Every structure is written in C-alpha cells, then in structure tokens.
Length: 294
Ligand SMILES: [Zn+2]
Image (tube, rainbow, N blue to C red; front, top):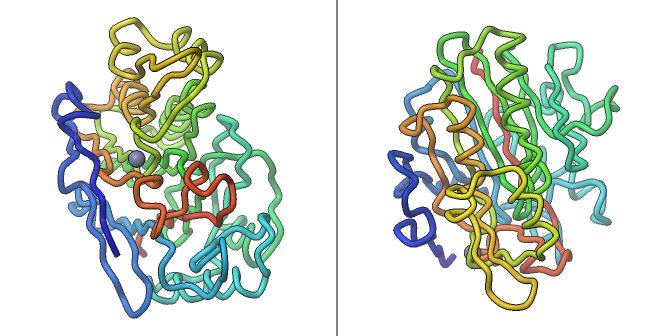
C-alpha cells in the first residue's frame, strides 16, 4: 500500500492553526485497514473509524470494502463488508443509522427509534446528507468517494455530527446546517465544537467548470475565493474543497485550532481509497462510522 500525503504547505497555505500534518492515522486489525483522525484522540468517549478499500469481500470495481447497496455490487457482499468492518470495530449493525445522500444540506436528529435504518431496517427518511445525535451506541454512517466528510464533536454537551459535503453541500454550507441543528437540539456552542475535514479529493486532482466557480464566488468573499481556487485554461479551475469547508467552519464560529484537516486525498490514493474522479465513476464507497461510546 503506497500512501501519498497532501503537501499541506502548498495546498493549505494560510489556514492558520488548523491541524493538518499527522492528522490521520492508518491502522489495521486483521485484514481491515481503516483511518482515524488524531485531533479527535482526546475524545475517548467518541469512536470514529473511516474505511479504506482494504479488507472486504467485494470484487472488481467495488474491491473490496464497498458499503453501497445502490451502485450495482452484490447485496450479500456489501452486507458482509458491513459485518466485517463493524465486527472489527466492536460496533453493531442494528445500531447503525445510514444517511440517504443526495447532495442536500438536510441534517437529521437521530434517536434510538431509528437504530438500524438503512442497514437492518428501512429508512423512515430520504434526502438526508447529515446526522447528529447525543445517544450513546447509535452509529452515524456517512458515505464518500471524493466528497468531503465533515465531523463535529461537542465535548460540553456530549453530542456529535457527521455530514457529507460535496461541492454542492459545501457551497450551500451543510456545516452551517449541522452546527445549527446541534445548537438547537443540544445547546452546542460553535466555540466548544471540534471539527474534522476528512479524506477527500485534493485541489491538484479537482478540476471544475466556471459554472461551479460562479456559485463559490457568490458564496464566499474575495480573499476566501483567492485561497480556494485558481484558473487554469478556458473555463477550467482547480477547486480546494477542504479550504472551502475550513472557511464554512471558521465562519460558523468554530475555532481554527479546533479544526483538523486530513492529509489524504482520495484521488491521489485511489488504489486503496475509492475515488469517483480517478475511477470515472466506476467505484464503491468509503464510509465513516461515528458513535458515542456507552
Ligand atoms: Zn489528489
């Protein structure tokens, strides 16, 4: 396994105080290889494991640890992957609550009535890209393959949030919706929240059109835009989604020193992380499993 790290001095220049270098730890248990976020180590009451492609039973473009039932992979193989991963992490399928991601900014409060939804029983919801909870043992399950995972921990009110922030979720600011819901539901103050921007496509790998950039120009100020994208040729730009999500967090009132950013790009590491761009859409999905320990 060849690990290629993002050059933080180049791509995340000027993101003061955020924890970037050594922000991820790659570990293995048995055949299962997974990623942990070191700035969250201090919160021993929270479990957060991010998957890789390694250790599952799926084949071909889904090889091997694919968690999507919706992309043409064999149901039994996908379910087996959940069992393998969850068993390794000492988590239970019937406590998982899985998003139904459609690039919205809809975030849902999850309680024990919803345990198992999307995995061991049908969902009662649709079009949900983020989940929050304060209930121990419930596992918030979110899916990625280049899009940006954003995670939130409030140690004061002991609640957590997990959201899917692709370019649409980023420019529409799902971070704002997640933090707002944590505030409204649990009393979380942005000041207290610790956040992490997970493995996702880096700026060097992420070319977008003018139409996308136009939306970012409308949502961010000039200084932020200057740090977020640059023009290459014709109507093409290179967009930095991690930087955009960092600004979403800081503008929400989260302290820069409480923000961690992954130094792993999914596309640079597409041999062991699923990447939509690198695979031209022929791929499975990675998964983040986040829960409060009982
Ligand atoms: Zn990259």
